[in-house]
Amino acid sequence: MELDPLTDLTLERHLDLPRALVWECWTTPEHIRHFFVPSPHRVLDCEINLRVGGRFNTTFDVEGHEMKNEGVYLEIDPQRKLVFADSYREGWKPAPEPFLTAILLLADNPKGGTDYTAIARHRSAEARKSHEEMGFHSGWSAVIDQLEAYAKGLGR
Image (tube, rainbow, N blue to C red; front, side, top):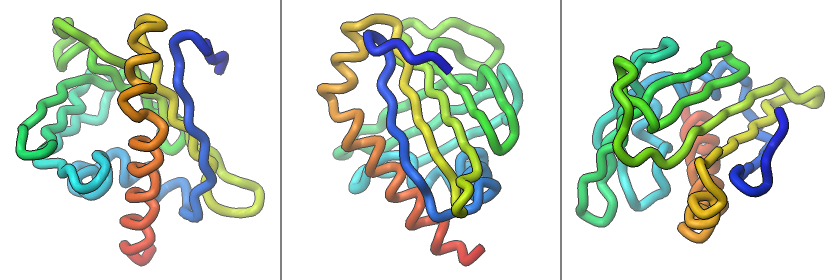
């Protein structure tokens, strides 16, 4: 995938987890609640309809404020690629103020575990810069750390 440094942010990591488990965590509401927002914030609710055009809705508690994020899946390649965006809601209803398209790429690492790439694709260079200044790298790194700790705790 070709990245555009003007509009895309990316984060790559190696996870000491099987790819199937990482995928399961990213596609199951009960799992999403445990890692999808940096602590001490919390995921209050998650609704998933795992199909292209299906909903990926989350509600967060951020410092006592409820934040709703509604989106849809744009591409699903099981255990390899997951693309979702907040530019549409289920039923292809356009969102009034979209922020990003998220792309998750998962691959088996030859030495074991999973190579994990998260890409945040923005509509403009200004939106990308704003997201970076909001703490994209630290926030998304925290989410990956939480995902790995949570998944290891599942004992699989």
